[in-house]
Image (cartoon, rainbow, N blue to C red; front, top):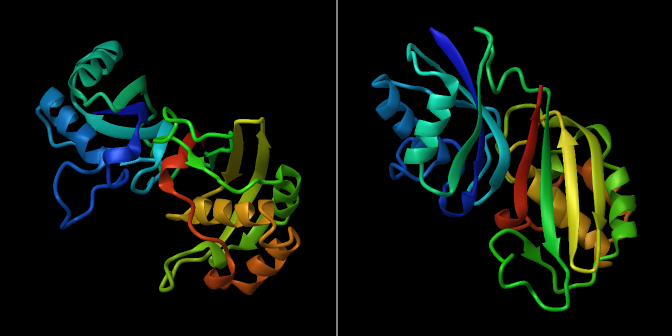
Length: 247
């Protein structure tokens, strides 16, 4: 039995996230589209394991997944077949033989997300599907000051929309980089794990620091409060990209 590792790029705009959900309409999760093609290719029942459960509307440059199969196809043949039959908003960019025990989710050590914010004088017609446009002027320095309070291991319950979340809400954020030019601001966040909407709520709060709605030092109080109502709005999904899964 082979264990095959995939690197996948996708435009999440028309999907209900990475993971298929029981009771939802078939064919709306990225995972489902890939599994459909894998089943056709191998004539086997395939379970595709993804590293990150990106939510509805979120994109990925490099999602990692693995599946087990008896197929004798060569790696380049698998890549060619999948890209021939997948919809054009999903692409397999890499295929490798993985160790028997490799698990895309369990073995991931960190995830890097990137959020794109348009700030040009006029919203770009061509970037509207892949970035959030801010009509407010954002002060990058203040956003960086606020972000500094997030570095390290903290209880980030204030950045969870799930009030009944029973799992630990402690996470470690390794780095947050915020930079930009006259047209765009990029926020990259690297951490050991993220739950749905966590990065987007963090970005929404950083934008509040950037537009002057809160003082940068307020971020520390928000984290310590563990109170979702004190954090910012959930930033739109279209601006968020899974940039890298780290092993």
